[in-house]
Image (cartoon, rainbow, N blue to C red):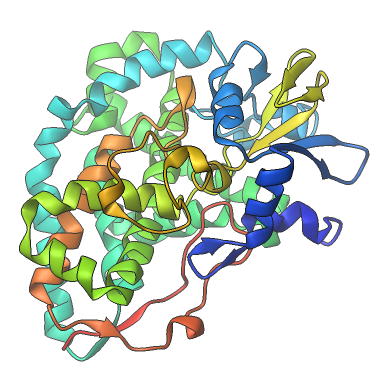
Length: 395
């Protein structure tokens, strides 16, 4: 991190909930721009909406293979996360075909009652504690942790390790070694879970995949898919729950609307996904060939970073995209990515947000921040943006 100039880290910086103004200024003048990296690496930053979609959809021109970043010699098999996010066709196509049916609305509907139970349990615990609580630790973190455990079919007693291993890999200040160590530890744990599921498949995601496609996928691939579900569905949803609560608490109009009207939650969540874009930058892409995007000539092996937070504040998103406005109507935002690598668990994330926010504001209608907004501790230079803690007064 000490080798990276501030301009390179700019896409990960924010002022409160908003990307720094420099990101918008860069988008207005140069929608695809060079990024300065050490060791002679050539990299590009994409901030324009159309240009972002162009890169994200072009799997033939850009590779997602993780070994392009680290080099096969520098990375052991235990450190390669595998899964969908870091795979190229045809492996990506095969694995997604196996996983996608488990994330259809119909399949996920079986989790809906449990999601509402989890939310209610957390609200009960907060009410028992009373007074001031940390909404991050008592609400935002436990909900996706419980739901992911339920989805995968693993023990909830391991939720603390889930949280630690998921968050460690996104902390750039901890260094690449720490990130790879977290990946190794997570995969080792999940490989053991997969072995147990092989012996006695349960009703969770891993058990279903083994029962339906056991001879088409090996243990390493299953662990990689489970790791992707964990990292893609835990910290991202937790950050959304916490940051979305800040939006509600800073604007009582939205708070009351969600509390009083059931039909307000869908447009609220969709606009919140666009506005917050907690996954700030998509997984890096590596150019397979010479390609021109937004007037920039990208050469083979160049690294391309797509700023999802920048693209989601583009004028293509409607009038005044810097403003949070659930009334702007549905916009095809990039909060879940785009194309073949679009987040397979997008609908699960939406289900959790739609269940959590109305229940929270109806249970605690007088809830308010226990600290000034400028005093909140936000993460610095993290790929997944979030807040460390969120103290609130419940009444």
